[in-house]
Length: 99
Length: 377
Image 1 (cartoon, rainbow over the protein chains, first blue to last red):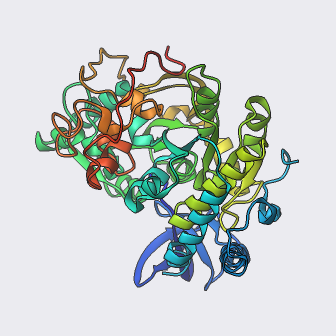
Image 2: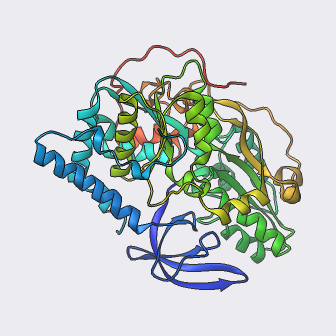
Image 3: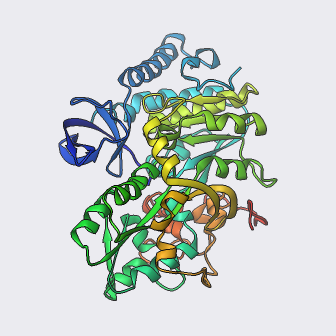
């Protein structure tokens, strides 16, 4: 029910005061409401849930997360043992309640 | 597909499994709150590949499953009336009410229509001015902005023939109900990523502090789920508990401000009964006073009704993580996706349906009988 799928904005139009878009999901296109991501531009990736873009996909964060996973793998290979706690990426902690 | 394939990479998954194995020294029970995550975990066999110390407990985060039986029965009554077009997400059609389901109403001539997007209901209302159109607005915070748009556009376009049957549920009060329960075994929570895309993460800080449990905001692809588990295990092994975001490509601390403004306008917080669990205070949204005239319950005058839950169904225990689906005696026998006794066997995100779909027909262990539930009332 809370499924969200990343899709690429192909065009943006105004339908009676509501921002709508055609969004491409790897070849399948759908009409999507952009009312909640007014910053979305053609070419951007948004996360779509039940016909609504609920957030932009932050490309930089996606790449950073993948780099972290790669790094964990490389360390594991180089050191011959899985690295541990020391390399947890605190940069993505949500703030507030962390030590 | 971009942003999906990368987070399904098997080599990186192996790395994350290794990391978890290297860190874990003691048994930990981690609850994935969201049904979408349960589905991903069972589909990919993540729970079976984790070290024995890490147990995943499936949470109540399937809105189809927890929509109260009274509300389902009200939906069935409204949908059966002449001159009504009843619009619903497809998942809801097979959810058993006391005596039938929406498919049953449709087979007896009710005009029940499946919508992909909530605003499809607005178009249906505009195309059918001589009918009363009712939209079944269920879901967690993720779905709420889209559902709220139905009310907003009904008002904006002066649609007098459109109303909403609202039964929204909220994640933080559910986590609180579980964390505060004396019977809870949960050591840490994976919070539902897309709920946080809308609402941000700050709502979870008081829960971390009050209950001393790690909460890690987690996505849905296999690598996302594994990273959420990895981060939770590391916190637990270090004796720490803080709020962490393992899904930064879709979640930030503040969430989606335009969506939150719409939710603030259209909805107001209310006590909500969760099917199989019971009343959880302040755990739902209903229409705000400004939109109260769009409430289908008053428009169609459906009063509280006598409801009849299946005697065999133990979905309440499944929803609270006290029973694995295949430990229920009715699982796969009296209860199947074609003939569900409870809502957890209906939605693809219900734990029972996920276990059935991916062939988890045998229980891995025998569980003691569970005696009491969370916040029943």
